[in-house]
Amino acid sequence: MIRKPSSKLANVPHSQIGPIAVHFPELVETNDQLQANNPDWDVALIAEKTGIALRHIAAPNETASDLGVKACQKLFAEHNIDPKSIDFLLLCTQTPDYPLPTTACLIQDRLGLSTRCGAMDFNLGCSGFVYGLSLAKGLIASGQAKRILLVTAETYSKYISPDDRSLRTIFSDAAAATLIESAEDLSLSGFEFGTDGSGADTLIVNDGGARCSDQAIQPRHRKRWPSRLYMDGPSLMSFTIGAIPQLIRDMVAKAEINMSDIRLFLMHQATRKMLEHLQSALHVDDQRLPIRLSDRGNTVSSTLPILINDMRNEGKIEPGTHNILVGFGVGWSWAGCIWKA
Image (cartoon, rainbow, N blue to C red):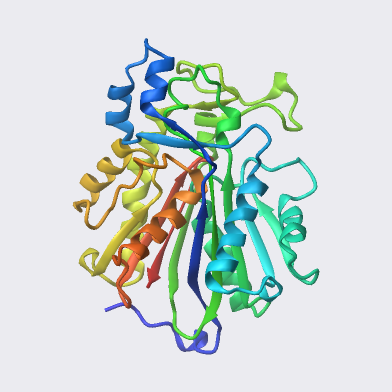
C-alpha cells in the first residue's frame, strides 16, 4: 500500500498534473536526409543506438519563447483555459531568448497573462520537468498559487554544428505546456533529488556566459565536434546507470511500497541505449518503461511531458495507478517523484 500523508499534511493543498500541450517546430530532419548530406556517416548504426529516426529543428529566427508560446496557446485553446486564470508561470530552458530579461516575463506578456502573475525561468535540462513539478507543488502547498503554467522549451539545435555527427543525430527542439492545479488528493509525492557538479564538464556550453573563456570549465577528454555544445556520452551513461536505479529504490523504500506497485516508469527519453540499460537494471520491459524517441528525438526538459501526453492519448495512464517520473542529465542533476494518476 502507498503510505498515506501524515495528519500534519491533511489540510495542505495538494497538486496534480493537469492537461498538457506539445509544440514541435515545422522543420523536420530525417535520418535519410542526414545520410544523403553526409555520405561518410553511418547513420543506420547511430540510429540503432539512439533509437531516433527524425528530429524537429527550430528555424534560425525561432526561439524557446516562440515554441513555448505556441504550446501554451494550444493548451488554452484545446482545454478552454482562461489565460487570466494562471497565477504563476514557470519556464524551464537552457536556451533563453536573452541573458536578461527573464524569458518567462516575455512569455507572460505575449500570452496576455495577468500582471499579478508570477513568472520565472529556471535553468535545468533533462531533470527540469520534475524540478518544475516540485516548485509548482511548493507554490500550491504554501497557498501562493492555485493554477501554474509549467513550460519546458528548448532549442539545443542552435548550439550544434551541422558537422557534429554525435549531437546532431540526437537532440531535437520542442516545447510542452503543462497545467499544474491544486487538488484534494495527494497526486505528487516522494520527491528525491541529486546533484553532482563534478560532472559539469560532460555536457556543457562553456561560452556565452560571464566566465572569461580562459577560465571556463573545459570539456572532458573525448573527441570534440565543432559545436558549442559538448557531450561526453560514455561518462553520462555511467553516471545515469549508477545514480538512477538507486534513486528509484530510495523513492520506493521511502514510500513503503514495492517495485511491483509501480505501474509505469516514465523516464527522460535520452537515447534508446540509455533506456535499455535502465530497463535491464530495473528488471522491467517496454510496457512498464516505454521508449518513445523515434519520431521526436531527445527534447531535453520536454521529454517527460511529451511522454505523459503520449501515454494519456493512448489510454495507458490508468486512473489511480502509481507511476514514477525521473529526469537526469546535465549538471549532473537528477530528480524523481511518484505520481498518482
